[in-house]
Length: 362
Image 1 (cartoon, rainbow, N blue to C red):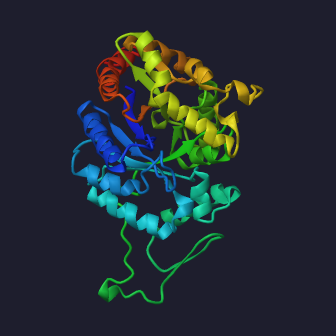
Image 2 (tube, helix red, strand yellow):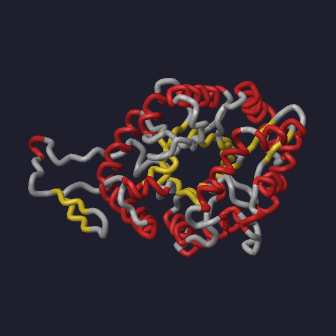
Image 3 (cartoon, rainbow, N blue to C red):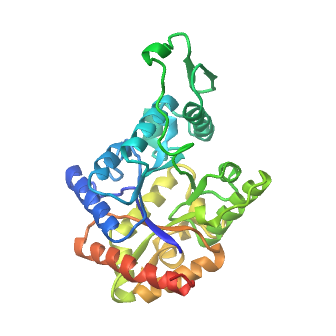
């Protein structure tokens, strides 16, 4: 069976008070658990009025008190912004606090002013993520003394260790050897995706890439796993998508295009114009940026329709991707509260059950 989860970037209307945004996000979380979502992910951004959750672990800490079943995770923990020892400690603590409901996604940041604020050169982000993961795994799976000399960080512990006083004992996660670990995947033929396959981490594909790029994500991941002598497991693959469900396809497409969903995608395309450009989002790399628009997204990436039409579009996507383990619905600002809640309920109560039945799952 294909599970379903939720990804909260979030992207909110900057005119909306932050407290209202967070209250609505928490309500979305509670409703998601009530509707059978298996996991809920929260983004990290430090200098955006649209993407305004700066510490997803704090959000998760509160979320633990209002949920009992759903797995929770930050997507991603932006490793270049934090010392690996701090990340290792706070996530190990959160894993115990959650009684083992914690998921993890490690990755770089994306907001240009976040990178600027923390003094991160964009060209160093990938190397920083790799180094941080290695350090975190060392701290989670071994005991002092530590003598770790990285390019970006160092960890030296030994001289002050006092076992008789419990000084120098570093908290390990509850889940062994660590909580399930995912990595975000955007680019074609990514070296990071190949490494994720070698390590057995779960690939978490971006919500705005075309279906042929999703297929490339799996091919790259699978080749990495096979190069390490492992059999790639499609159950580990998470695919995120923008989806809007309504009673009629006409209504769903109008809402998707003209609501916060359409505005979110236009915002992200403009944001990537500041850096790498729109190649990430294209099916055909020869497409001019001027044609990579919301109209293209409506035809290529966005899933919008009545429940039956949404199931049809999911099958169309799967014709290119093959099967995967978890479908991740991307959350958007509740600019029309009633319509978004209705979409959420139709997705969970009609789309996913019909989709799973059509695949032979009962």
